Image 1 (cartoon, rainbow, N blue to C red):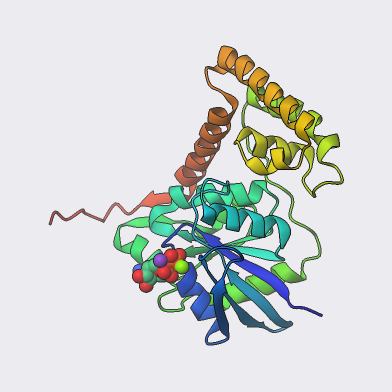
Image 2: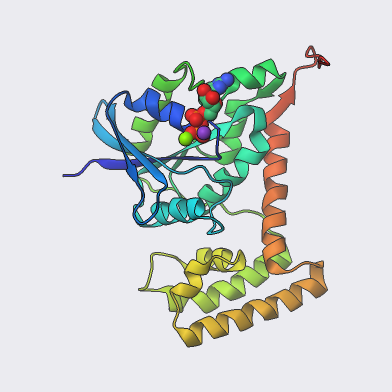
Length: 279
Ligand code: GDP
Ligand code: K
Ligand code: MG
């Protein structure tokens, strides 16, 4: 039987590769993603219940299809359906990092957060409360310093527990507001029967992806379906422009950022003793 797959995801420069090295040691293999020259690293991670295959995904800021890196990460999460996704976030730059985490949770991915670079955050007088973040996100949050390996054992422990947990991850529902949610609901009803059988994507999820302009949804429809989808989106855009002054894509992205900001506001504080030094 092949080993369970666990993915490492995160923004560029959050310490994914450092953490990958800490977790896999020398048990790694470097290649390329199919068809492109983007490096693909995978390695064996030893856990008490057996080895898992750890895959270091390209660094991305969002789970769309705006770049080759984003396409690789989105496709991998969709098709390989990893047993867990370790989302590596930069504690000194939490807000930017959390956008991707929220997208992963929205997609129903089984996430564990590695709250990395806590040393750098502390140096900058930034305190992130891991317990608070854990409560807000509803998934494990483990502080780490990938450069030294601090927190790696606790991360492995929480990962084991996550892999043992038979219950699947429940997708996070973001509060998009009444009008946008109504638009997404209508798009979801349109998409549900058309995506059924063609993908593992439920209608509501397809609606969010289509709203963001993700070409994968159109690609799953026939010509007529694509034409109708475009019509539907144009119609929702007109409705929303009149009601809230933005189109669907802008609305979804803006509300998601708003949600991320509120999470950050609750989990991050600044050390009052910390004084900025001018250099
Ligand atoms: P990736 O782009 O996400 O794969 O990030 P890397 O693993 O390449 O790390 C980017 C930079 O951050 C490197 O210089 C690492 O040495 C550094 N780094 C990684 N983890 C930590 C950490 O926990 N604390 C600090 N201070 N630096 C780190
Ligand atoms: K890097
Ligand atoms: Mg890297």
